[in-house]
Image (tube, rainbow, N blue to C red; front, side):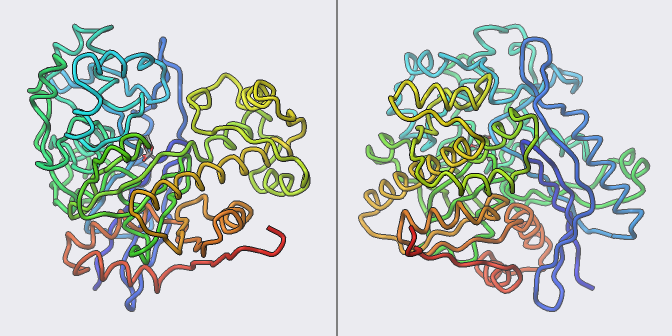
Amino acid sequence: MNKTSIAVDIGASSGRLIAGSLEAGKLKLEEVHRFNNELIKKGDHFCWDIDKLFSEIKTGLKECHAKGITPSSIGIDTWAVDFVLLDENDNLLTDAVAYRDPRTDGMMEEVFEIISKERLYLETGIQFQKFNTIYQLYSLKKNDPEVLKKAKTFLMIPDYLNFLLTGIKSNEYTNATSTQLVNAFTKKWDMELIESLGINKEMFQTIKPPKTILGPFKASIVEETGIDMDVVLPATHDTGSAVIAVPEIEGTIYISSGTWSLIGVENHFPICVTKALDYNFTNEGGIDYQFRFLKNIMGLWMIQEVKRNYQDQYTFAELVKLAKEPEHFTSTVNVDDERFLKPENMIEEIKNYCSETNQSVPATPGEISKCVFDSLVVSYQSAIRQIEEIYEKQFTKVNVIGGGCQNELLNQLIANATAKEVNAGPIEATAIGNVTAQLLALGELKNVREARSIIKESFDVKTYTRSELG
Ligand code: LFR
């Protein structure tokens, strides 16, 4: 009988447990449990409710048991960069502070006084985002040095959830690279860099790559959930899992479309040239030590916040529909401006930006939404131009993957703006990539190449080309 793996995929707004297995040469998925995730305020900081997330995983495991699903393994992926610290008794020393928290304001500049931006990029290949773990740790060192001194263990969010399930501490490779503390060439913690920042290097764990069988559930978890299996490491960074599910990667620019839009290409080695630094492209570690040469674009977070600021009066589908109406409204914002990372009110921030840049100020939900989608496409187009400049070649295809690929308007706008073939799908890219890594570890699949051709046969992909109206 074919083996089943459970993908736990937790994003900024929701989490799911999805069972995946091979059936008659195709990959089949079944959603077992879904729950909400959101930022909560704890004291002065925006945090993730890590206890709730763990309890939802256990609820999902009980659901598996109740449904008679008997998985061989489970793998967890989440967003990147965030972490917790544990004390000598393995108790939490910190909350799971979220990357949109302003604690890192100004930290990047302070770190550059210790290590130059160029050196940091040459060694890690990682883009400069003020929320990277390196700046979060530096902020702790400045504002809460005692906590950092007491810390015995550094675990990123999926690492911590894995620890709660198995009692085993480790740092998974793909997520570790997002800290900007891993050397892109040795694939190990850059201890010299960590020391130069005055951060305790003992707390970092051995880095383990995707496809590692971490170990079995603790007895207490088996008892509580009624189910027993191995924890396997997928690419625990969600984008790392998602990109595994790009069916045809050669010659393709992908956009992993969710809360963020991650736009880039897959590479066999890191590209740390000056132009890549200037354009702020990252080289995040992937499965089999491939690299994701990509850029973060503010993504659907913009429309998620707009929806929230309209008190959820409109669904996403309604906002998309409304965005089609104001045909002559053309104002755009620079979505990558930090002011959109966590504004008080996204609608007001967009209006202010338009007014400050002497453009028509959007007034209706349709104009606001059109402004968001048009602006995202401007940013995609510019990133594509930069990739083509660095690669000195033209790409003919764009593959949009993830939940955001269901936005038909956005797909069409990309096709119109780029004149490239836009392939939308698979929607469940992250869960597919997560399950794939586990099935590889279990010997159900041979390699990523084979997995991609199975993924191509198993899931719908819709093609968009430039329309005459565009
Ligand atoms: C997407 C993502 C991005 C990362 C951002 C913050 O969910 O993981 O890849 O840059 O969230 O962690």
